[in-house]
Image 1 (cartoon, rainbow, N blue to C red):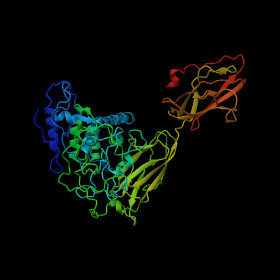
Image 2 (cartoon, one colour):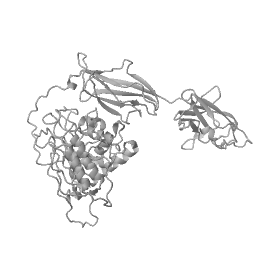
Image 3 (cartoon, rainbow, N blue to C red):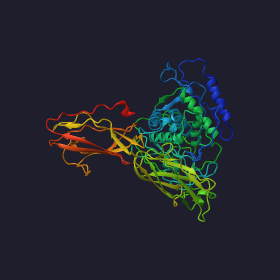
Image 4 (cartoon, helix red, strand yellow):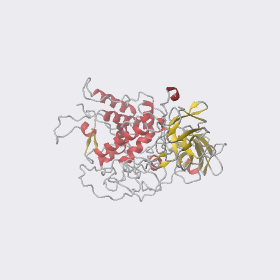
Length: 582
């Protein structure tokens, strides 16, 4: 195999051309017509697709430093004839992902495949970012539940060779109440984790230092904005939104391609840790380290404990070799635009209340205007919009939170808000990221889908003997302005009389889950063709003529006569004709 190709991509010294050349070399190292090698991604680090501009809502890591080691040239697939205990090539070693970390990536991919199928997230993308950000959680130094043995914390973002991001979490995650630091194996900054964090291991909390939580959060972060990661442009946009650097984009794409060619799991703690970082040569100002709950020592040994943390500036109190001088006083940075904001106001002259029908988009966009104490507009301020309340409404892309920067007029417009199927009222709060000042609140109301007409699909009389059951099931069709009304809620009630809609206490009934009589059914919903088929009806021992009434929001209503008498033969409603379902 060829000698190792330039594995180091230095920030400020290397360009995307280096990464492109690496991909070409990787491709050339695979003999034409070789069998057993998976087909690589169509997207290569050569960046044949133009690099799009980064997303306007900042990025996940705050442009924190990252590992710059490129994949090796040798094939990542271990030889099937390899003898246990024999040395492995660097290609085989780099392709080995710690078992718990690999499991977290694959579970995140599976969850996103179900919740956001249009995103087409490959787990190899999570693995590539995890490699670049933390060396796969420092070579897999994690407990069985996925929590890292010690916190993974990047250098403080104080503008001293890094981005300037003042504290947004009061030190809750990174232990630093002056500046933010990237946290966890996927290196989220606290302000991003506050809305992007997820509970990936179902323990009831979202922990940035848990690889299951962090991987799932990264997957949702990469799948926002309606991006389809099978498309080059969307893939590039998503990666750049994680860290806004063309070098970073090329590097991640290199690892994606490498992992697509073959991987295998290795024991936790046995993975390698990269050697080169994008902040090599910069002074490191780690700041305080975050507190970490002590845990019992794992029962299994941790082979190959790395001598340096997985993220630049690590902040790992249990790992030697990372100097930290919290006594050095930080310099006083110049005020940022966010510091000058006094409060947020609504830029919408129509007020802060809006309404939409279930399943539809709200016609008006939610927005916020950042102003100083004197009322002047402030540009480039990050505003977070958060949906709260009992609702399934979301912003475009299926998210509950969106972060947008204000424009030259000081206005930030949230992505399109779309109502879910759940009717009711909820709130959307607009706040300045990292500031506790007066924000702006919107009240949004979702009204049920309407149907202005209900009809039976068959007119067969409904008859039954006392104590028997009605044959067949009653079916109705809902329409709105002549068109089938899909997903419309309906209520079915055995009423006392045509003039009294109250529930009857005797006569026909439905059966509840426990077999007890039920004479009012709620939560019914029409199908895509506006059809609703009711459950089977039963008769008690009382003879007589009874009424069943079905109603929908919007005024739709139909009443069905039910006759219970000795000697009657139970009637069956025939199956609806094809025309009734059209």
